[in-house]
Each structure stands twice: as C-alpha cells, then as structure tokens.
Length: 270
Image 1 (cartoon, helix red, strand yellow):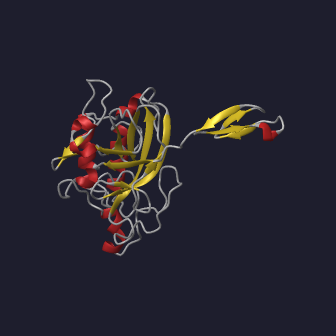
Image 2 (spheres, rainbow, N blue to C red):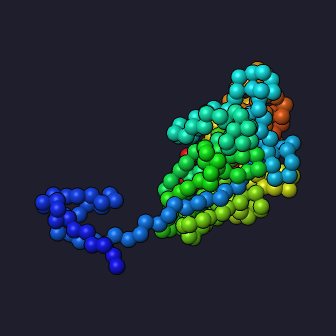
Image 3 (cartoon, rainbow, N blue to C red):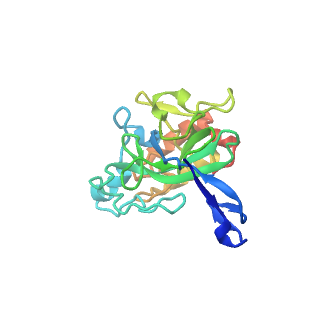
C-alpha cells in the first residue's frame, strides 16, 4: 500500500514536498527513497606513482613536514570547493591513513557531459582508493540516467569513465586496470592515461588546470624550478614530492611533447 498525501491542510496555499509545488486538493503518492550510491573508486596519479611500488603512489607531501622538520604541506581544507576538511591530513597514522592528496569527483550526465549532477572533494590514498574524510566509501545521489564518473586533480589531467548505465546501490570503477577504462571522445585523441609500473595513471603536468598540457604548464614549472622552491603546496610540483627540481621539469617536458589533453577539453571545465 502507498501513502496518499493531499494539500488540503494548506488552506489553498502552495506547499512544497521535495522541491515540487502542489496546490490545495492535489494528490500524489510517496514512494521509497533510493539509498545513496556507495562508490568504490580507484585512480592513480602519474607524478606520485613514479618511484612507488606497482599500483601504489608515494605520499611525500603528507610526510614532508616530519621528514624535513618543515611545516606540513597538504592543506586541511580541500583546494577545489573548499567545503571538505580533514585536520589530520599530514599524519599517516591518522584515521584515513596514508594519503597522496585531495581529488575532486564529479558525476556527469552522459546525455550532456557539460552537466555536473554532483561533485565532491575527497581524499586519495596511496593504493589509489578514493575515500571520504572519515575513511569511508564515498556516497553519491542515485541517478535515473546514464552517467560518467570524472576524477580531477589540481596538476594532473582529469579522466572520465565510460558510460555507467545504472548509477544506483553499489558501483565500482577502477581506472588503473586498463586504458579502455578512460572515455575517449574522438578516436584521434591521444591516450587518456599513461602507464606506470604496469598500472594506468592520470597524466601529470596540467598545473594550469585547463584540461591541456601545454606551454603554459611548462613555463610555470620552469620558473619555479629555477627559483628552487620547496616545501609549498604548488601545482607546479607535478612529481609531488615537495621540491621543484629536475623531476618536475623532466616530467612536464616529456608530457608536453606528447601533446596530452583530457576528454573534458570537449566540455565545460571545470
């Protein structure tokens, strides 16, 4: 049996139920609210994967302060929307454990990938797992349409999943297992990911955060390398170790030569 709700108690006024306006005398049924989607998501960053074990990333930014007796690097508030906070982010022994950085996860419509249905700032662990600030599996609103999962990082090219027809209940997506896991808009586009130690990772060096690796990215890295900057949370630190040096210069130069860009270059970015 379903419950029947009328607007008769509102004396001819307009009441709102789940953002739907109804007038006095209107009748509608109340269904069961779908549970949140539990999204098990895995992704690797090229810069942090270099020099780590297979399928893993370094957490040099997290340990920089304790290693060099310097101020901590990772910000306790996310750098994307500024709405998520994890005060213990620079402590590998904290609740969430070993961390590489913040990432942003977007749920986009397949019918129109310009439409962002939901987005969250989350934490990226060294094994590639994306988690909430309490270490739990991220929860998202279920969608009655096909969606793409997009992962964005402040100095790596964003990656977009293939179409997910049913975004309900429990969804698992692992970008690291194959190049085909990343959606490619046009067959002539470059590879959407790059392999490190047998696993697929996001391209490093989009430090201008515009979906392209180009001369702007290289110029910014070159400038900071010349200055010998270290110990700062900078997008030009594409190697992600807290130092601006030959590692950042070489990685940016190599990826610039390939001419890589993200599938999101075709759509609204960010």
